[in-house]
Amino acid sequence: MHARPKRWPLLRAAVEERSMLPALHPGDWLLALRTTRIRPGQIVLAWHPQRPGFLLVKRVAWREEAGWWLASDNPGAGAVDSAGFGPVPAEKIVAVVLVRYWPLGRTRSAQIYPNGRP
Image (cartoon, rainbow, N blue to C red; front, side):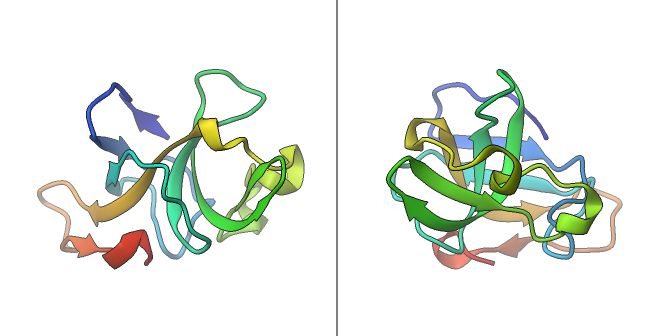
């Protein structure tokens, strides 16, 4: 995941891996909203709990006392998710994905996720 998280309410990030196929493909761009309103089923951007500076894109599975359980849509791609590192503390959730879009020249169009859920 490649992004430049600052303190703006909206954040843009590029998908680099295949862990979220078929929902997200490498080269897709995401527009996300910083929020603390997280729900199961949403795709979020989150800091890896064990690798400082490594931003993940994952689907929220459920809430636990220790944080959010984040899952990959394509675990067979060698995905790194909560199955490997456990629940992610709420303060490490950066944003909820609102829109997926593609750079100019690609054949797909933008996809809007109502309520942050594809």
